[in-house]
Every structure is written in structure tokens, then in C-alpha cells.
Length: 412
Ligand code: GLV
Ligand code: MN
Ligand code: MN
Image (cartoon, protein in one colour):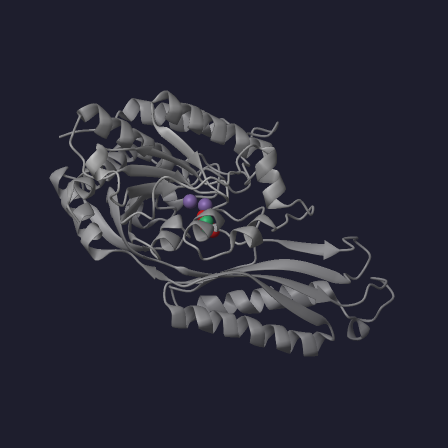
């Protein structure tokens, strides 16, 4: 059985993971920053060194490709993809694993000399995490035509810096057309980022669907006043109101069942002083559910709770939608191929639904899309403690190789 070069994959993961760290040693590689540039440059240098063509598109997505003999050039490619931007204080695997495994798969297929009938393209999509610019999944969303490129380039970060200017400054903006069209099939390999595979003792996750996500920013406005002299009944306390909305919403999700989750991940108090009643609070809301009806219930709950709290606490509450994706379904035929590949390699597999967002959900709008997961030890991710055992990382990349190779040989 053919295999990828496991040692090389692990070395590259470590090297990419040490790129873009801050002076405290944290990995915070937000989209279109100098840190992102360093990681992009490293990835591109590896791809070029390995002899693959590199292309950058209008939103800074990076693609590298293994082309085929003349007759297959017009065929729709098979695409492997993920991202190399990170959250704040991240681990080294989220996204990077899928992109680097893609590079390993291209190398293994080329070195084997196996006859493939269509191009294979690896993509590293811009701003998957959406930490600096919203919406998340931005590069893949623009790529599939779900967001106008100019609208995306005009998005600004909290300092008012425009994405288009930032991408140009790091040298990753291009208006040349890509030499290939949409892929017929898209496969993304990723760490699970949750506890299911690890606790079940399974090596390979076969993803059936990806959760829907609804992101909001809320601004609560009350009145600043003296913390000592203002009686409790006479306050317009934006802080208390914001915390009440957050806790009531999270309580709602706790009662709604295991598919629904709600997170208030950031809350900013103005004026932020110990003895001043907060006049203004800005906070974010992340709602997720793997079925659309459940996600809508969470959204209704946010609206109801905000209205009630606004009246009860005499504050105003504005809600701004930041991003919205529907739950998506992965391709059943490719899921079966993943299961077959796992069986052949003697790796136990399990079907599951992803609670994290992935570029695969955007690609599923234009291609048959599938995802392969490997176990996250302890289910930890978006944290430096994110960890997957080396043998599991190599196993996952070999399954990706098997699946992509068989897709690239099929005449459909
Ligand atoms: C991305 O990793 C997300 O699920 O927010
Ligand atoms: Mn990811
Ligand atoms: Mn992530």
C-alpha cells in the first residue's frame, strides 16, 4: 500500500507551528498579518521546492497543483483543502494539518508515477477562523461565489484596517484568473477538535455533516454613573444587562439538547473602571446547531432574551449579524470510500457530525465534499494544548491519499 512520507509531514507541522509566534511564544496567526505572511511564505516555498505550480486568487487563497498529461487538463480537479490562519493562542494542527497532508499526498502521488486522469489541487483558504475579519470561512466563501470579492476585501478589523490593503501589504493579492475551474470533489482532512473519536478509541472519523453557525455582535447601552451613590433600582447598568443576556442565552442552549451550543466568547466593558457603572458593553455571540430548525430556535431565543432584558433593565440592545451558515451535508459516496480505505488499512472508523466550521461546508456548494477526522486527545482544540498522536496524524494522511488517489482515477 502506498504511503505518504510521515516523518516529513510531522517535521513540516512542527516548523509551520513555530512560524508566526509572538514574543511570549503564543501562536496567534490572524489572517493577513505579518505572522500569516511568514506561514504563507513557508508553505509556498515548500510547494515550489517540490515542483508544484502555485497560484494566488483575488482573496489571497493559495493553491498548488499537480497537473496531468494534456488530455486530462480540462477535467475538473480534485481539491484537497483547509487553512493556515489560526485563532488567538492556538495549537499547531487546526487547519495546517489538512493543508500539509495535502502537500504530502501530492508528493506521494507524483513520486509513485500513478496515472491520474485529472488535476489535483491543494488549497489554503484565507481567514477561515474569522477572528480578525468576519465572516469566518471567508476565503472559501468568496471562492464559491457566496460573497462578493470587493465586499470581502472591504471588511475592516477592529483597528479599521481593510482586508484588501492588508493582503496586498503581505503580497497575497492577485487578480489573475486561476488556470482551473471548480473541483468536482473536495476532501478536507482535519483534527476532530472534539472528544468523540478519542473517547471511542477510533482512528478515523467519517464526517456526515457540519453544524450551522450564527454569529452576532451585540451592543448594550445604558448610563455611566457612580458605583457607590446610585441605588440599585435607579441604574441603567449595561454590564448587568449584557451578562444577563449571555447567561439566559447559554441556559437556553443547555436546556435545548446536545446539538445546540451557545458561546459568548468576548465581552468588552466601557468604561471598564472598578467604580463606574458600565455605560456600554460590546459582546459576541456564537450559536451552533447541526439542524437548521434548532439553529433558528437559538436565534429566536437571542432576540427574545435581548428584548426582555432591554425593557427590564432600561437599556438599549442592538444586534448585528456577523456570519450565518446553514448546516451542510457531506457526500455519501465519498464517505463510503473513506470507510473502505480505513477498513483496508485496519483502522477503526466512526461516523460523526462536525461542531466546528470548515471550508468543506462552503465547497459543498460547488462540489461533492467530504471530510476525514483524526482524534484530538482529550477533545481539546483552539488551545495550545491541542494534540493528536503522531501515528494518528500519519494514518489520517494515508487515508486522504487513498481516497484522493481513487477519486483522481475515477472517470466521473
Ligand atoms: C472554526 O474553527 C470554528 O469552528 O469557529
Ligand atoms: Mn480548522
Ligand atoms: Mn479553528
